[in-house]
Amino acid sequence: MCEKRVLIVGGTGYLGQHLLLSFTEIQQTTPYSLAFTYHTNPPPQPLLRAIPHALPFQVDLRAGHGLDAVTQTFGQPDVVVNCAALSVPRACEMDPAAAMSINIPTALIKWISSFSGNNTLLIHLSTDQVYEGTKSFYKEDDETAPVNVYGKSKVAAEQFVCANCSNFAILRSSIIYGPQTISPVPKSLPIQWMDSVLAKGEPLEFFHDEFRCPVYVKDLVTVIRTLTDRWITEGKQMQLLLNVGGQDRVSRVQMAESVAHARNYNTSLIKPVSASSVDRGVKSPADISMDITKLIQTLHISPISYAKGVRLTLEAEASS
Image (cartoon, rainbow, N blue to C red):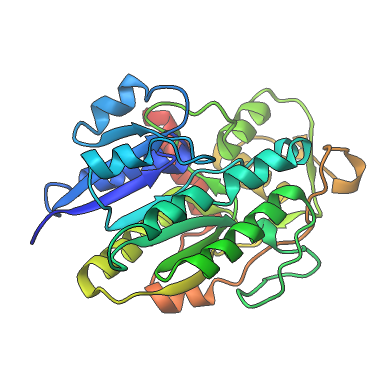
């Protein structure tokens, strides 16, 4: 079997690094060639040492600069996983033009479309924030009605993928949590942040009326690897849209309580407040919990519980 090529777009981000490590771990048993893109800062040395056979490429996704170098040096990928995004809702709200130009993968899909044949699978990361947030357990065929610029940019991205790509899987991910990456990412990770603030023993407010289905990062990696393996082994084109969340619908209060229980912190430190009591500079949907029945039935993957994911995350932090 010839080596199959996998390109991780946005490889230095949180999910991107976890994917690179996972694909690197299986290179001894599965003949993958691996490459990844980054935008501005060169890949950190700890990451490069952990993935010695992966090729890095500097790419500007807005204009597509750097993609030709991928073709020339790496070749046509069999799978492209697009993790790159402007994903901070407040930043998107402040600069809608940047959100649209980065989050809609125009140049990436133009590049993929230039290949001969339809031999590349695009796995595109979307978000639960495409939903309005007025009910519980959204299904994939429910109407998308985002309440902020970030969600609107991701809906536009999904529409662009569907209209211009013949072989794709769109993954609507909830909050991604789990262990820190080999090279720590600058953004605050949810479990680690809650652990650090609760450890101080000071009261802190959490929203009781905002609900999500947080997904453990290694479950999301398993979903992406399963889709990759299915395309490479079966060769059947797909046009797939999947909700990818954890099995539990939890409020921000319940998220913090799980961390407190795992660490034996005093749960009375967690003060429930309404999301409407805080001005975050961007509108946030109230309940975008997702029904993941289609994910389970299509890929035969059952994400772990939030409580178990919290324990695994904290155990990984303690051993690192």
